[in-house]
Image (cartoon, rainbow, N blue to C red):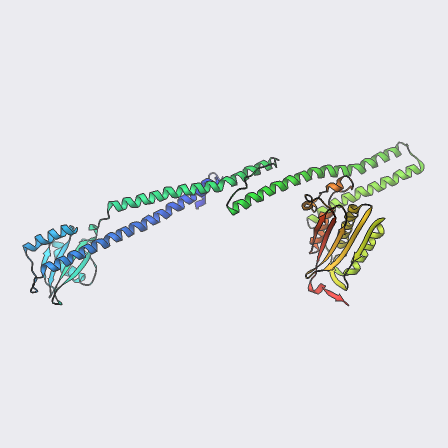
Length: 484
């Protein structure tokens, strides 16, 4: 059974406020008990020291009273009265046992005069021990404190005063105990109040996050959270949760658009194919027109197949099922070949396309197929951005630790609010939704491939004057051989 079992009922967790308040309260109580024990011990110790000091003063008083002006030890009935009065006056009116010894160690005076038989029998041994120890044991087992004072005359020791008093005579003042109890009780109440206040302050924003999380689970992403919190960790928690809620709201919106977009994109070729085949089957068309309908059906089927393949490839790559095979490549030659193949396939018309590579040839280890897929996708996007007229630049350059390939266009750019989302799967920008058909997987798929190559794909810049996407390829020492 651990401490935590106290806070769990029927295997169900308790509230944060109750959990930490109880734990802190137990800690506080244990701490106060320890402080109380130490304080009680200190009060007892102080009382003992006080009693010893007062008794020592009384011993000095006795020493002054029993030695006369010529160095004789005076004892008698009169001494009893004097010592009793002085004892009461000095506050040592306790069960004191007083012995006065001469220089030879003989007891010439004792108080009380008649000692109890057990103490009388044990007196010689007690006095012998009292000469050497500050505590001796009474025949009954009780501890007796010892105070010694030499009787001196003209710097010569003529005897000794020995005082014994039992430990049980040391009384701790009730007021001191009362003050201690009041102090510890006040500290306990104050500590509990402070603990409860701070635990409540800690639990409230977390409870708000929990309530907001429940709303999100129920499908309500419009949650409001108080973000004005001074504690750094709680502020970061609440702020991060608010960002997560906003992100989920965006993803939910994207999911809705995705379903509509994918449905539309897949429905369009299916509807076209179905209508054309129905026309052929009903013999509405014949001859060359029938052949043309079949060609359109074939083209739509290929486009439909391409979209399905994109979905399958993306899902496979997302779970790490697609491998990357790196091989040694002349990076200048690779970039020129990719650019040439893309330019041959596309009718650029009035679009200016330029390629810039390194001044010196360089060999690196890379998967040429994956690099081609990434660059082709970036070039296609750039062509869609510039439209019928504009310029596209493909630039290869080297930094201190990697190779970078920029694909730059002078199109209208990507709206600022959409730039953080361009690499999200199935996201399609507002400029593309009505102009370009697709699933919105290109950039997300390309970034995954770039990361698989050990690099990255970034949107370096996008303004109203155009956009720049940067493909980063790692360059290890063994890859950085330059060919003169």
